[in-house]
Image (cartoon, rainbow, N blue to C red):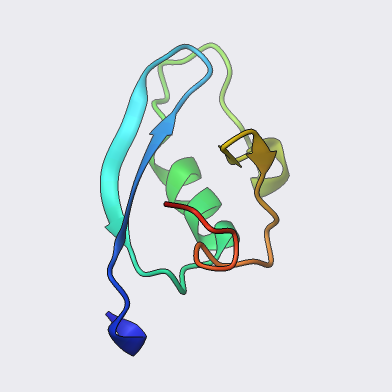
Length: 77
């Protein structure tokens, strides 16, 4: 990984309790890139399907992650 930093394992939990992942990401990965990944993997058989990145909120430790920050900057562990 870039800069010798360890990859961060992330699992996405959808509103109904189903999961996407886990997958490993470089700490330099942006929240926007993660949202794009979630949108591309969202199960199409769900009643609610987000249409844009703004429809997706990523929350870690009770905080909504900001699009322009990286995983490292957001202190995702």
